[in-house]
Image: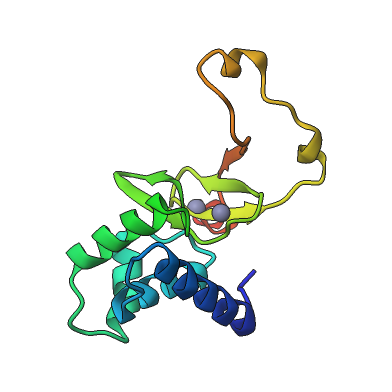
Length: 149
Ligand SMILES: [Zn+2]
Ligand SMILES: [Zn+2]
């Protein structure tokens, strides 16, 4: 599901406000990088974000996109959805959700499950540290990859 433009605007305002509070600058470039991630449901990698932002800011560099994506993830504005090949994938959906990941093309889609509210972190996982959240990844072959066979 694509986020509606009103919600994106609200999130951008909240983001700029939060940046001010932590003394970081919500520069035009940083804001557009944030916008590119939260307005996509594709869980883009840095290259994908770069392509989207370049349409608005032609002079932006891939390096700037990388640095800002890592900073945004570090500060908890976006999260890392996983990896596909050797690229990190970024996720602007901060609500509790799970992922369907296609093992062929790397497609990542969000899904929610009412049932998952009751799932408990297995005890064995707790022996490694203190759990913060439980996210499930369903691996499979997406519809369009199925059609290709
Ligand atoms: Zn696929
Ligand atoms: Zn996601």
